[in-house]
Length: 315
Image (cartoon, rainbow, N blue to C red; front, side):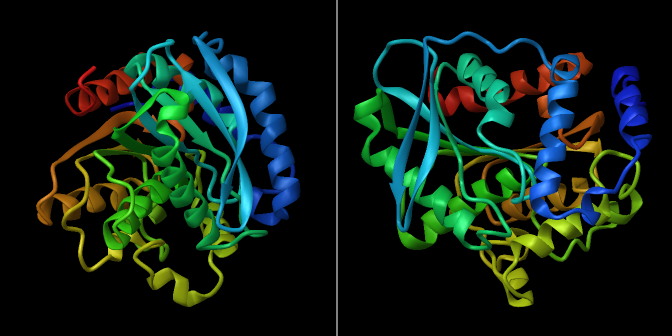
């Protein structure tokens, strides 16, 4: 399907920006540049932030640090489902703030408490530190659910891109270590193969917002060594055993370099006996979940997630 006009216009704008490419920059400079771009485009690609009952910022302890989190409350009721949200950004960029509007919409749509986790970023904190942050934050949410009105028995993990990688790795780690019981995972255009070996990485690796060179830059900053790429907690697609994992909603974008590895992971989950719903969004590019103003199909994706979660959350 053709790329919607407004997304095509966005690509035209991004592809004609002058200056060094992302992969030519150091991470600090790249983060600042990405922040400026988001400030410039924010009102054009998304609507105003959705008002909620309340939003709280706080810090929580993990194994060797304190992490910022943001808790979104849809209403003042107790025993609400809990959705842990891990933001995208290649493990190197983005933040709680960059995904604030995404989390607000997910909170409202699903009438669930959303906890957005400010995990530490690479390369200052390489694999597996960001994963441990997300795993520990999930454990904290279970242990403190009653404090913020959550129901620990209805725990979901969700993320986009690198955040989706972290989400599914948290599910694997929880299964392997007897950790928090997760009832559902939502993986939005997940990164699943640290070797970047899928055909779409090359076929769609230039001109569609996320590039092959940028992905390699992200992975190079995230890994501590080449051995890390073999870990099932980084290259989740390569895990030998994917049985016994939570039901999953996996979605990809038609013009995303990551689409093949996302679809392959959905198939592997299903082959291992897990309940999986998979959908490729036609005409979409990587990052579309943050761009609802550019196409009605994107708001449709939020509705699809809501439908997928409804049975598990009993909303």
